Length: 607
Image: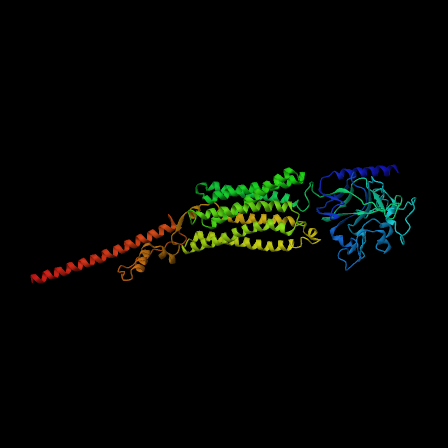
């Protein structure tokens, strides 16, 4: 007996120590609309669920059950196929015993029902009838459950020692070596946190239902009102990791750490290229360098935020930290789209200035920043299962509008720039902008595919099993895939505009012909002759045109200056010179003919 007492004391000490472990906590009370709390769990050999009642404010008797969601089909017994309001009976009561829905020894517990021959020992099902601290005159003795006018079985005598009469939580557990969480017999008295061992990763729920008890010892009249249990408490989900984050959010900690390291590596490579070609850097490459530094800061801020949240839970400091992270995230998106838009418009490559268009770009970027902050805060603070669709749309639709505006404007501008470069035979620039177009087009296609997948997933958010099915991938749908997509898109674009020895090709300069078939298009004399032929059809070109000398393939010559103004001025000047030359040549010929006629006339006179 002493040895058993020592072992029991050690076990109680272990249970108490485990109850102090940190984990994800959810509060519950008798006033809750939903009678159960659930959470995903990453399991190991040291994971568990603790249910703790506040002894100072809890009294009465409750029915408890803890289970993994895959076993929810065994919870309760179907009593009606037509009444949707109460299709199942979940708790074993005297009425349920009378109609044969459960056994006598299970009164006050949840009902386990199996149609496929599965036993409770083969599932994660654990249930108990728990008596809480009583401070009022009403008793929560389980004999009250047996009170019924007729047809109920006779309750056991007060001196009955059957297991269902046991009031000690730990002495009444089944001594079964093949069960991880054996359900106790009878009604157990709550004295310390109830622990449920978890060894398999899954979505676990703890349901607590108050049981109304009639005590014949104090009942004086048929009109007496039975006592209704009141309780408050906390369910602690102790995962394989130390901390207070829910299991569905913990992958973000390692994800943002990995993203931070990858951005540092890629940013270091970018910094080396900038240092190597520091004298040839273009303005756009300075902007990209600033954005790279901004991205590194944002990734480390996200990682630190989730680490802090895991260590300290939701506090006033964590709320402030959340706004900082949201501002960084929204700033990154707005700045990225803004830079992509001005690049697509051809700033510093095709145009020297955007004029009033730049103001419109800045306004759109500012709106996208504001809506991005609201969205980032909303997806963290709002519960998807309980938030109305209208509230969710208020956070999503404004951001979707500005995002769509950016994408449509960028693609339209990029298409215009590509057309302009193609007409002007700017092959090097054209190749870069076409690659940029393909990158953005692929990004839009991927976003559209994931939007359909996310919409299909969130369309079932009000379904009973939505959280159980999506808790592992919810972080990926909300944060993960967008962060990875941005990473690959950004660095693909940065690779196109990377610092290199060819940077000057991106300056405000134009390529001369690169192939024989295009050489004539760029020959100055040919352009002059074409201009003269268009303006004056009566002028006959006497001098043969000099065939242009073809340039070697891939040989590029650049002519610095304003593309639009320079080409027009050159054409006009050349045309004027050509017309002047033709007039002078024609005049010289006429003068020569006159002199010849005059000479002949003088000769005839002399003869």
